[in-house]
Amino acid sequence: MSNVFDILKERGYIKQLTHEDEIKKILEDEKITFYIGFDPTADSLHIGHFLPLMMMAHMQRAGHRPIALVGGGTVMVGDPSGKTDMRKMLSKEIIESNVASIKGQLSKFIDFDKEKAILVNNAEWLSKLNYIEFLRDIGVHFSVNRMLTAECFKQRLEKGLSFLEFNYMLMQGYDFLELNRRYGCVMELGGDDQWSNMLAGADLIRRKESKPAFAMTCTLLTNSEGKKMGKTEKGALWLDKNKTTPYEFYQYWRNVYDADVEKCLALLTFLPMDEVKRLGSLEGAEINEAKKVLAYEVTKLIHGEEEAKKAKEASETLFSGGCNMDNVPTCTISKDKINLPVLDLLVEAKVIPSKGEGRRLIQQGGLNINDNKVTDVKLIVTEEFFEHGSMLVRRGKKNYNRIVIE
Image (cartoon, rainbow, N blue to C red):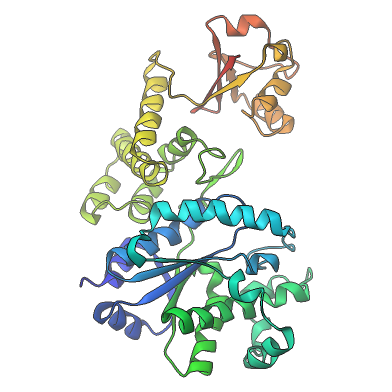
């Protein structure tokens, strides 16, 4: 069995880990069960979840068994990690709907056939806990002094940390213990912002079960300037095509900074590292070819080969001045929306998220309609704008949408 540890390290996934020598040995000598948790705070995963998913996929390809844990229980408390304010409380109905959506997305990346992977919801055990018994059995192993030094809590103390959120670390630690007891799970993987919670779980297993348990984090997806990747003018870069279209998704990766191409190819595709390094070393105009490969490969993984081909074709059509607009993101409006102010119409068509964003685009010279720059925020969109059956909107240099009348 090839050691997946070396693969993960070479591709740049590993950020922090416990017991490096032991982890390397166990991954080489055994087939282990490991887990990653995903709290259903929305009805879709976003690009920030994609890195842990890729890490999980590499582990499964090397023969290890993943557990995809959907946090139907922990989401009711809310993880304070990386948050300056308390998360919004979700109803049970919304949580159940989100869980169902996320389960469908996870199955695209992980092979659950014939128990090669396990999909489980932590509400199964967390919702049944007796609070006093939980405190006596689990809480006794957690030091408040030590918890307060954890980064996930420390950055919240000045602004305020609710007791509800303070319980999150205990719950995540208990998840690891429960999975260890049920499935023999010995390792937790996750984003680096989860490091404190993951250490708590591994330590709990060692205390309660007197067994080895390990934690390993993956780097967060940041650009060459250290800023988080995956933010667009519409918000997060979602994995659901109804929230971020395959074309928009493709264009995001097509437009990354030159300095980020090699890193993204290593982390977000399965291309061999020799090819990753070759593409990453291209310079000048040639680096655009590497960006096309990146955009195609990542879109193919998320949306499938057919959607990736359509997004690639649409992109090339627009930038080569072609006339086939079939695969350009298209929205339909009713005829009674004609003669609306441009900002109202674009918000109605969901081309822009708000009028404020539209004003900013116009003020910066970044909004074009039918290849004409929009300079007047009060412009009225008349039927003449749809002379050829549709209206082409461009935001910035490369984000296109087509609007047609039904």
